[in-house]
Image (cartoon, rainbow over all chains, first blue to last red):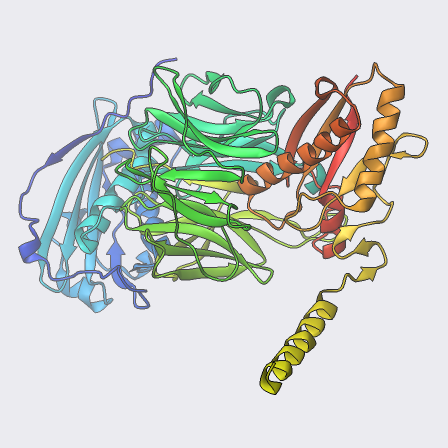
Length: 449
Length: 157
């Protein structure tokens, strides 16, 4: 199958968006209890384009639909408060050319997003502008051209640009989540690999549910996924090419391989191999197929995750008697325990910024998602629940996604598994919408960077 | 020995005995400590040969009862030399998925090792871990969890 190419031409048509003019700024390093009020004016569409998009995409008003994507993203981030479009006084087409700032200030908007959608050579062309209402200035303007089916992605890219302009950090909206879709009884759960946009749309199922699948993770370019499959009742780490659908076993191990992840350069898979009651960490080079044993200890060593520079690996081991988090150099040397708090620690994941490790903690019958510095100091627990685990970082290192299960009775009544996200600050905890029950989420990197 | 020291030692013994009594194994209905001792979920490979053994939380050590069960399995396997088995190791739902996969593997191997010490060839035994993926009891309570921490011997042919 042909690789899906997302043609997105970004052209800057004004250059006055340097930091110097910026008056509105959103601080994302602390919990934000006063989200910035802003207006996302529906993108304007001329009648001809509107009719054509209606035929192509079965959408009544593509401009309003793209705006809704942006509005929803901004609201979910917890940093922005998009105002109700019913309160807008100015028409979208006029606002895009020359906003009447008094009107927008009147409804308390501090920033304004306007735009225009056109059909050009059967393609979707979107132009948008970000305005500082109080300063009465345009602070950013961009245009994209893409195939019309990518209209939701246009909304995500606009959000990323606005987020970056107002917070000073890269966004995480033009991204996907790979996860395990679950259905059926708890005792014989059916699990499939599923992939969706970060906002829960465009869900696709990558396996049929004939065999148990667990813990999918993206490679750095988001084209490959590594996961655990019980195909033919042999639990092994697999590699799946999302576009071609081709799957292959990783390595030739005489036993269970599990807990896979890619190295930051995408060239290796790191995973556990269990034999005779002992699990150690191995890597396999995807090109040379060379296998390397990284840990050599009679304890359980699992859940490895590389630092973004590839020089270190954090992992989970019970060599002290209980599950704790350790860090070592990527060749397996200089192993150092970093978790020393009360309770058990599992599923360490290195943040894309490199400064923190997120983890699951079990203490006194409760499960926590938390973060600590890479030397184990500064432990901070973000959320407590009956059961939750397996955090995965947004590409900008600001948000964690994980899954949470509810209690059930012996017949399985009351059971559910859902994806949740929370800001690094511990604020803005939200359930992430999925078509079915879901677990083991893994966040992609930005699809266009 | 100074009086002071005798006093201190007596005190130590006193506290140690309090600690020990607090740790004393409780037997409540179908559990001893937190190891399942009931029969609810147990199936039989042959008359009088239970198919599974149970474990304490986070443990892979075989209990006295487990060893007895495995000795019965070993003698049944010796009598039926054509039968091969799969040992399926499981964990309860109170642990992270990846660690539990390793734990299930370790539990099944603890059972395998014991069968081998009773003369069963390793070639006749394969091992698979399901971690926490295949509970027998869906309940979110200590009794259900104790039933799920298990290694089950299943006929492979």
